[in-house]
Image 1 (cartoon, one colour):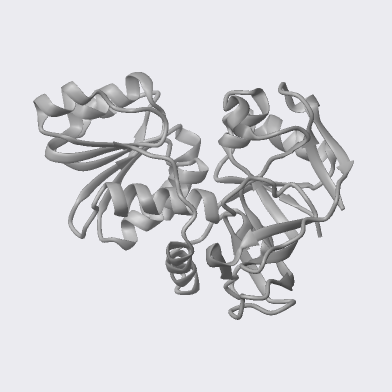
Image 2 (tube, rainbow, N blue to C red):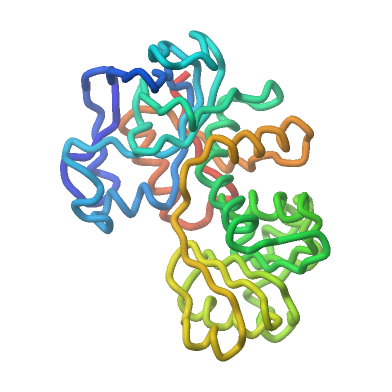
Length: 308
């Protein structure tokens, strides 16, 4: 099968198209014929070598989202059958390929009102947002939530999920993204080039930090005692959190089929829809261009790679 691999760490030019063996599935897996995948920031970090040996052995296939149809099911799998339309965040990376072996318990049937390209934009970003808000942020109706970088892949999902949970949502972005964020439900838009969020917001219940550094540090100022600062980038200052009575969390998303099922239900109801910035083909140049776009940090929502 065709796959886009890296054989050494480096820039987008290290991505190469290669013929590799089609994966074999075990009794608890399904084989998905991929129609679309997407680019996530972790892909470029792995490609650059930031994850080191933890990334796996070369040749390495990147990619953490898959949408397509079932080609084959393992002996212990009864929930799916060949040709079922599905999507998933596999437990291991490797979705820049024509076929992907995935543990059946993290696979969910694709909602009919979602294209394969849209479905590929949901799992990693959507699960990250859900786990940040629900599992770690404990967001409930009536809460005030600040989401940094609301126009990004995680941000666009988090805004919609927070609104579903009944929260009032503030979000930071550049002026060109104001209309997009308000269309997603943002109540208080902050143009970070003109306003300092830490000076205009206060008494918030939760902050989703997607930026780290000084942005994270200043986020403590807007939280009420007992509030939650949740970061997907770096561990918050524990001593400062203790002084202020703030709960903190730094986490890596875990693939969970039952949570992806909840996201699928929101999609079916029209309460959640992925934002797609651009789409590229699953070939050497297409994936290189997709990575370059991701690293420009100017994408709105998700960057999708399609095979069919």
